[in-house]
Length: 200
Image (cartoon, rainbow, N blue to C red):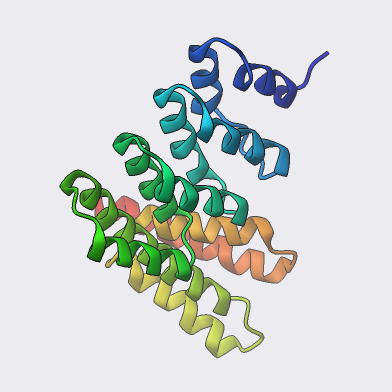
């Protein structure tokens, strides 16, 4: 019996454009090289719709191969629509270097439609990088520093999207092997979710 990944790979490599789009709309959320490479290949698809869907799908994979592919797409893609999606996706998984690239685009790009996506990408990238920076300090051996970082994350709930904070904490919980830290983060996660409920 075929597993989900092998079935997905059949879809993404199918001759039917709609099958490929179906695969890109529902990628396995597994950062394996095989999955990411299959999506990156679709950035060269003959169909503009498939290339756009591939650019959008890469925002689910916070890995360097995805960022490299999106940067190349932004530099070389002829379709404005695909380029816009590539810029937005890069913002979601950006590193500091990617943020610098987006800021440079803000200075050089002349197309207003693309500039809208550049501005959005900068906002999203800034939040992601800031939250990732705070999450580094929750791994500190210093209780005071750790507490300060968690409080800063709480403060950021009032200055950034809740989802950015919650997703950042969730990522840290999943990758941490420190059980004590996991419990502390899970408690913080629970606090933020309650806050979110109160603010809605």
